[in-house]
Amino acid sequence: MARGGTDRVDGVVAGELRCRVAAPAVDGAANEALVRLIARELDVPRSAVELVAGAKARRKILGVPAGARAAITARWPELLR
Image (cartoon, rainbow, N blue to C red; front, side, top):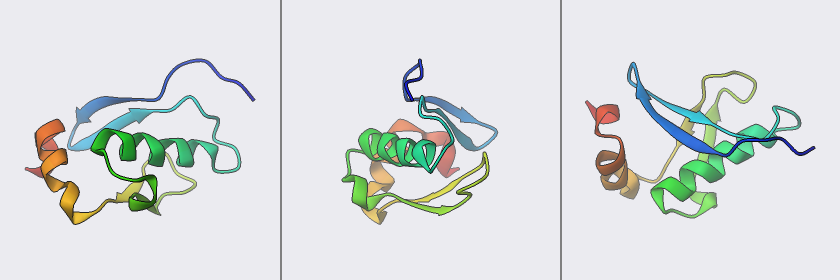
């Protein structure tokens, strides 16, 4: 199922990272797109990013490698305050 738009990070809002993905929320496609987006943004392998909670919710918790802290701080410093 093709959808318009692009996968992107909109920034930090109220202490949360806001992202958009073009994939539909069907059969985990949007979750997979989100994981791939975050892996790409942090320059880590897709296998290093894990959906920890929120598989069926709008709000997600992702696990990322401890070594990604520097990339997170550089890209989105508001997240680690």
